[in-house]
Amino acid sequence: MAAGFDKLKQLIRKTPQVPNEEVEQPQEKLKLLLLGCGQVGKSTLYKQCCQLFGRELDRKTFASSIQSNVISGMQALLDKAKLLNPLWDENLLASQVIVEKLDSVCPLKVEEAQHLKYLWQDAKLQEAWLLQDTFQVSNNLEHFMNEVDDIAALDYHPSLLDVMHAETRTTGIIESDVTIQGRQVTLVDVGGQRNERKKWIHCFDQISCVVFVVNLNGYNRVLFEDEEQNRLLEDLACFEQIVNLANFKDTPFCLIFNFRDLFKVKIESSWDGQARELSRHLPTDLLGIVQGYITCMSAQLSQLFPDYQGGADYERGLAYIREKFLRLDRRVSNKPMCFATCMLDTPEVKDCMNQLITTLNKRP
Ligand SMILES: Nc1nc2c(ncn2[C@@H]2O[C@H](COP(=O)(O)OP(=O)(O)OP(=O)(O)O)[C@@H](O)[C@H]2O)c(=O)[nH]1
Ligand SMILES: [Mg+2]
Image 1 (cartoon, rainbow, N blue to C red):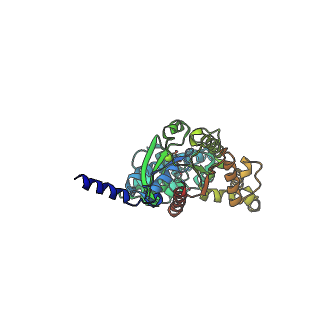
Image 2 (spheres, rainbow, N blue to C red; image 1 turned 90 degrees about the vertical axis):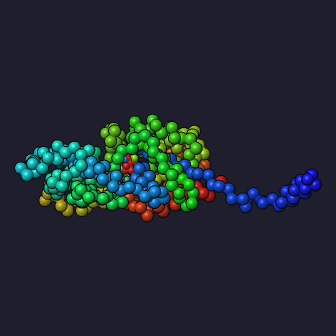
Image 3 (cartoon, rainbow, N blue to C red; image 1 turned 90 degrees about the horizontal axis):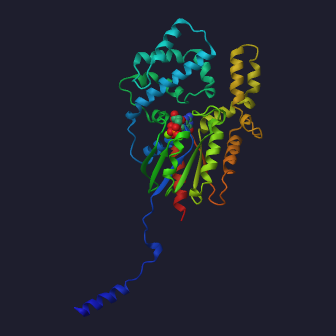
């Protein structure tokens, strides 16, 4: 018995040691924290990732928030249109009364959608829509009004694009597990409005990467919760605070410059880009000229940053803003990865997240 035991001990000692690097280490789960101010696109990124890398979204559950977005969007637009132009004909007035009484938490009826459509097609509301940057209305309204008949139908089944356009303000902290590039990833989404940011500290532990989302389109818009504050300036101030926190001294950052679609259209139609075109129409339609003037002037990036000299150029505008953010990061190493995205664009988000995880996978 004892001899047999000795033999066994010898055998164990002789078993060749597998070199460390050949042993497959189970890869640690990554935890990505999505941060940024309100309405920058964090939850849209979260939804895209769940759809792409996790469990398919149950699209039907978004129908009520889409209907609510349509109603509240149209009510905000109506208020603006009335301020601009108090003269209304009888038909318009009748639709206005009906739409103003709609409750955004109730399902939208087919006949109510007809009144919404009638108003939306009117020149006065379209004039107000041109000035969308000057009041609180969501960009998704145009997309939803183009399919309002479907949205009001009883059998409405939102498309993936509708789901990505849907807006619900996040409160609290939401988590989901997905698999990207074979790596398990926990995504953490938070609310971005000022009163929500107090809760962020509860998710600062064990973060593999902070994904900080910026709304490029906010450079000429004010915050929902504070109409005295410019959105992009708020993004900059918030980023400066977060990136320099001791908690994130060694944490990789990813800066996502989102809304590149609207930013491109806006900067290219800014005063720098449109001055000549506008002056050609000067004597004919005065109201259009004045509104066009306001829109184009406010779309100039140099109105916010007087030292900006890139004019109506998308790439130069983006580079200028990116540089402004990067300069706020006072850490010596770990410079943020940067992406410009349209979060509604599913393949683009897929590519961006794959690149991010590939980079994080290479880290020791
Ligand atoms: N056109 C356009 N719309 C976008 C883009 N990203 C997000 N949106 C829309 O912007 C709105 C706000 O997006 P959310 O993802 O809800 O913003 P959030 O950062 O989660 O906002 P909070 O929850 O309030 O912090 C939604 O209607 C989105 O569809 C984009 O790149 N382009
Ligand atoms: Mg959100």
